[in-house]
Picture (cartoon, helix red, strand yellow):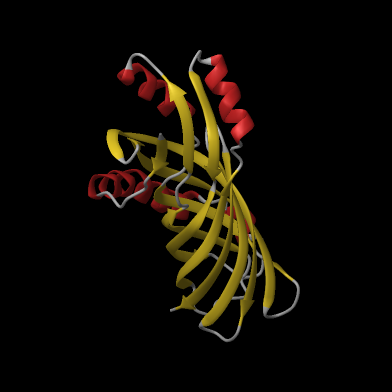
Length: 233
């Protein structure tokens, strides 16, 4: 039996996330710790503040076959994970705003890929078994996010920026047995992530970034290495 997370774009999810995260983005822009920002010299008054960016990445879950099998045993399931593919391609696109040279806020979309598990199992009640597996399967998903960060400058073009954000995500998975579809289900959540970005600015408009994110799902963590391009306007 193969259990597979299959994240897909979902119109209802996008609408829900926009309703949740857009107000957060606007409130953050209005109520960001402006006293701390205002106390610093604004070095970007003559520089473009808005930017769009997109990137691709490599995502890897912290899940392991040992941890999955321990959870199977704890749930009383006669099942064993026999293979685990916990890495996948990730993609992101977002809009950002710089309050000054250092502080910034971003909001956009992330898809951190899927996790696949092969399981050898014996069960009597198919519905009960699949319901328990859903509670154990490693988490991953896609959705919208909002994050804020601060640039520390190494020189005029190169900076290092830690950031903290919230990821409102949804994951879909399907269960198959010898290629026969047995069930579908969905999970969702709103979780924190933090990261570190190395950014190089070629000129007033174009820049590139190499960054790392850790997303704190309820049961697992996912680490993502991103390569991105940014355009200021």
